[in-house]
Length: 313
Image 1 (cartoon, rainbow, N blue to C red):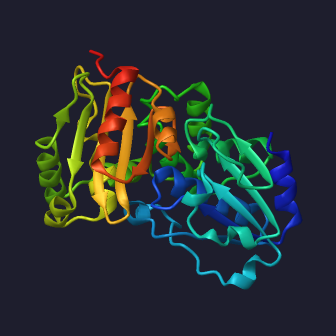
Image 2: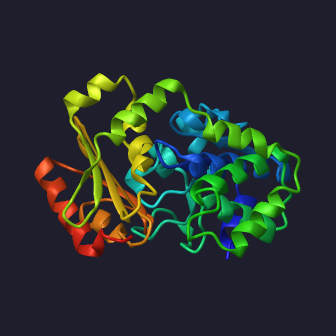
């Protein structure tokens, strides 16, 4: 399954690893994990990780991004992780590389690289990278294992989501044979400031419901400026304030920006990814997103979600 990508890794002396922008735990974890696996197994190679700031996931050891000149791509292999659309790749210079590869677990939308492994049966890209290492006989390091475990934990919803399988637990178990502190991971993941808890309380009070009981929050540009938080916190970070409500199986968070309205869509039961694709986005079957131009389109999107079936006790 991974042999063609492994062959490319063996062929190139410089490898530059990309992932999607505004990274989550899986994007950072897979990127850092693969980087340290390759550094440990191919010490003669030069391996970089590039992209925007890891922000909340900066606690992951090794998550500081490398500064890379354009010339580094001239004879390099660029590997893209955890990204289903070329427009979402952090640092578009991957296209400068003579060889490209991708490992991804999102629903397929487009071909991005010359060699690709896209498999939605993995709950996380970190599981894919872990399985890649195991199948190819590569050794792990504690830094790689900690990063990969972090991504598995976050993208499986702490092993709660229905994408979690026996393979998920087997791969996590293999990672835990390395020495790293799982308590440190969970302390960082669950750590929350008093200010952020107050912000979540404000967003809970903003929840509205459609006729079919789809929950949603809508934040205008004017409201956004009053919260004193960044876009990631307001958009993705507040989405799951609506999770786990009895009688609600679909929820959405809409945030106005100067470049359109960011739409974060989630469901505990239904496949909603086709709705995201319809409006120019994508993602996972039950966790996806898109950007739309105006509030009228938001209302149309909500109506489409209602048609899927928003009411479920």
